[in-house]
Image (cartoon, rainbow, N blue to C red):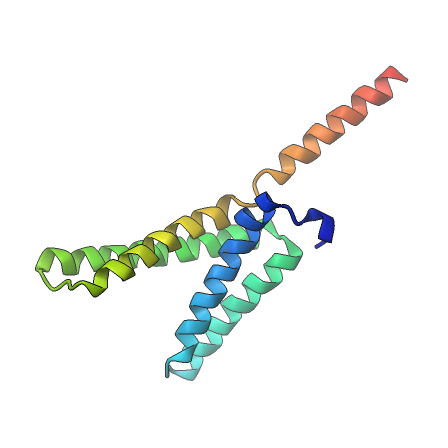
Length: 133
């Protein structure tokens, strides 16, 4: 990761979702959980951290889909509680966190998609320049 490549679009599309999910995982690990679950969560966090530097499109999309499915499941569980009348005012904060998590998942999936188009445009421009010579 080069310092010149840190523009606002890259930070919002690629780095922010990874940092968000790393912080969510850190908050999850803060609670007392089973060791195996903590190791799996740390593995996800390390994959996300490594993906910030490696910028691997496949890892980003797989992790985005995993977090999107988890967020959708939590949204359905929250709506189930609302339908049963068990929801309290504290559910509003959880709803905002889940919706933000869905948005971050979408950014994680789509954040690395435009890189190939830039490369194709640059190669077309190079071919045009070389054909002119």
